[in-house]
Length: 393
Image (tube, rainbow, N blue to C red; front, top):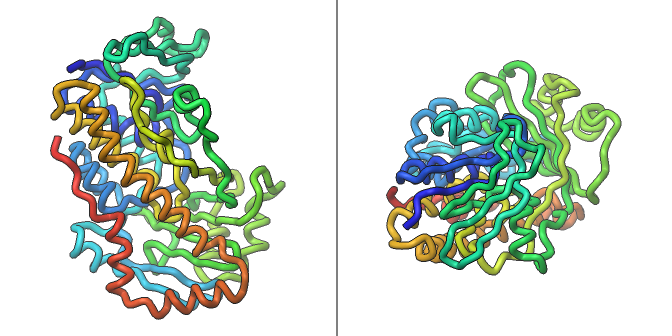
């Protein structure tokens, strides 16, 4: 069994994979093309499966301490009528934790702190990844002129983890016939408020016709909000915040207050893409795909990061338990591909039945069904994805 790995990509999945490999005694280098590991973005929700993965990596307690539990909230209509209420305490009794909210930048910072500084190679792009023999080392060639650290010599590794995101170049080279990510039909604008707000809920979603507005409250009293619009990719607004006030300004409280507490320059706008065509395998030779590179999904279930964290723990556990890298990657693919692709399909379906519904009859039927669904049945639906037990490292 080898003991050196290169992780391409310094996002949540890549950092978690590096932590897992480091914990089982591997020498790890994280190669990230950005000049600084990503502190951008807004907020993120971590469900029980993601928290359990972080526990397995040894990072659960410090990340829990930076989070706020989502105990109160639910789903509403633009007028404020409740469709479903969140019972975070019931979820905590069942799986040991409520859903937790944290600024993405804080999660990145805590994951980085778990790695030795010399393991992080930032401002560096990967030019190519190649393996001459099926059981031989993998050669990672770095792009010339792209390394702020000055490192340009090729890296040789017993394993390469491709955690290079939605538009993964490594995935494209391994599967040249795959169509790659496609637009989901939605675009999302999001931001974190500049100052704390007095909020009555920890988490909330509001569904209109072809639209969604939601928020997550953080430990320091600030909140992340997001607005999802249905439409083709590439549409941008001269003044995004003004456009959102026009669309959502008459929706129920605290939506107007969240927009009013946001600086215009803080608003991020991204089209939502997904890997709709499943990959036939997550491994090729000694290269493993992880996170969005393997199974990019829509955010409707809040499972994108959680599935990447599951990937990281499963990969490290397989490498610790199996006699060869090849055997470990076979186990990783067998355990991760069915589950993550099933979650991705469920997230896509949740979007179709959620914010993407626009017809008045369909919306009315959906809303009625939600109001009539018993709380126990709703909890069981959540547990389908949250109730995951990590392998031991």
